[in-house]
Length: 173
Image 1: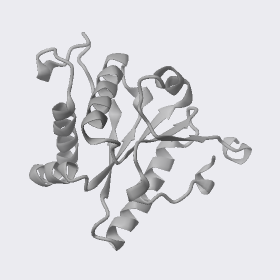
Image 2: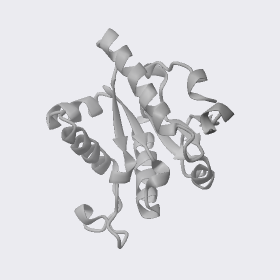
Image 3: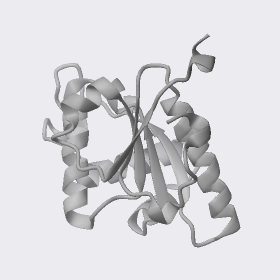
Image 4: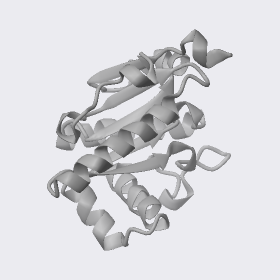
């Protein structure tokens, strides 16, 4: 699909969406367009969750592959929540409010760049997502990833839907 034919998604329908494409196809642009549409929905309806765009390149293990803040352990759902709260706080959302929104599913997480993460960080992130899905069911989120990397990660991911972006000839010149 291209950016113009992507359907408007209601936040209540958005669970574990994966946005795939080749480098430069417009995955991040589509994610931002989705954020814009979901923000308009949230403004129109106070019960709708707020979209929060986070770059996954900031989810990192140290160069040795350990998680320094966790004493070398694998991250868990609590770590994911703290990371999201920290990222939201850096964008001006008070930590208590960010934690409350996450706990009450009042946000739609729009996570950019699964393919941009180092392998160790990717593995930890996917483990956390699977743990959270096991505890809470599908999460209100969308994740971008290059198609080639997704093909290797597919068995590990528990996504419910994927959209693959194809660049049209008019956008490649």
